[in-house]
Image (cartoon, rainbow, N blue to C red; front, side):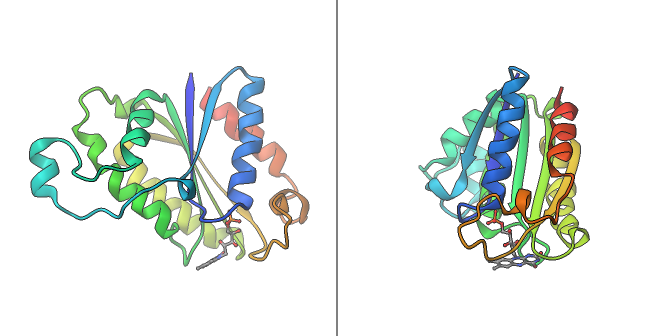
Length: 187
Ligand SMILES: Cc1cc2nc3c(=O)[nH]c(=O)nc-3n(C[C@H](O)[C@H](O)[C@H](O)COP(=O)(O)O)c2cc1C
């Protein structure tokens, strides 16, 4: 089984640390898990030229999205994580969402059976970040697979170098168990 994790934070912070922790849990179950940090990728914003992609079945933009789409087609499951920015995913994650539209032209993509976990982190109480996670789950993931888990964690917005803030701040006392439960949902 191959799981692709996609991180929508523009910085090294909570989202990335959570994905690394999840990766350790997946590896302990012999599950292959690759993490893609969108901030390290060259992803142009969608130009909206559907007259091109709808007919030619390819995107005219030549950047790192091509490789990401190939990895999405190949993977059995996804973990999507984005910080909550105003109850929405980050612009970086939204650009990824828009550009991934091209996957619907891939006849080799078995989209109905991809399992998906959606996680959002934010400095407001978790119910606020749940709006962001639900946005991703309800308005994007429903087109590309089956959401099996949604989770939010509370963070500090300023990390002061504490990249493991979500684990050590005391705001998410059950985070380790929560991540373990999420990995179990993928199996
Ligand atoms: C532009 C911007 C907008 C944000 N808006 C919200 C918000 O509406 N609600 C919230 O809970 N946190 C908000 N935050 C805080 C981030 O969600 C929080 O710092 C989160 O930990 C960032 O994730 P990261 O550590 O993975 O980068 C915002 C941060 C930024 C930079």
